[in-house]
Length: 263
Image (cartoon, rainbow, N blue to C red; front, side, top):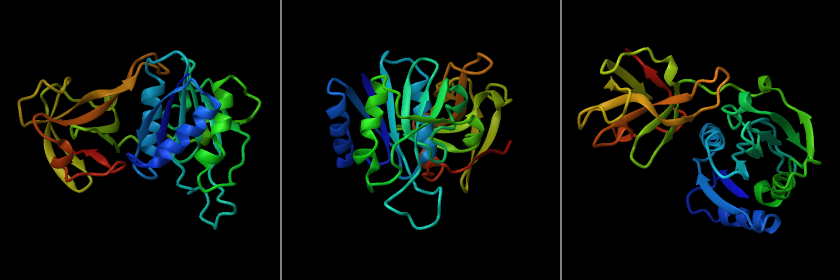
């Protein structure tokens, strides 16, 4: 069993080690990979759930995610209660277990073969992803579905926004939630892009490296997946500064900032 653990604990946070220990108690032979997203960033969480879950990988896979801003209710919390746990089965057999909060399920909701709640406590600990949820995730990983609860409808989950920063990679490339098939520009056409409060000229490219050094490219990026309702691949637009950092060019924007094609 290969487990992808996606959470907003922070790079190097010992919370990853604590949760890994709990998962390995229940699935001792599992291999676990860790992915840290920014605090409370359900958008980044949802983006990576889809990117990892809908693309090829080991046959036996579980994505266990935790990004729970506890924003579903503004009232004081009783017993550290937060958003509830859910289970999603993807078309390729990948199992996804984690908190339904914000956009965590937005990118996969229309691909789900199964979309159910999981009957575990919504409270009981400030650190539910360590103390409450791992045993349920491990049971589901081992095909024990006795904890599954009511069915959820895709309409109960928000659509992903189509104009945001989804991720900034290690090279400073800005991955967006703009679907590539919605951009109607010809290769090498000039474009003007706003990210947050910063505006920059760019060149539309059908391949990032088909631009001169120092040029900001606006092109279909490396993120996307083959599963789609119409059978066509999903691709997401990316901002790429060849020989530099698009993130720096746009003033170091945060995930979830608005990206606008001005012309």
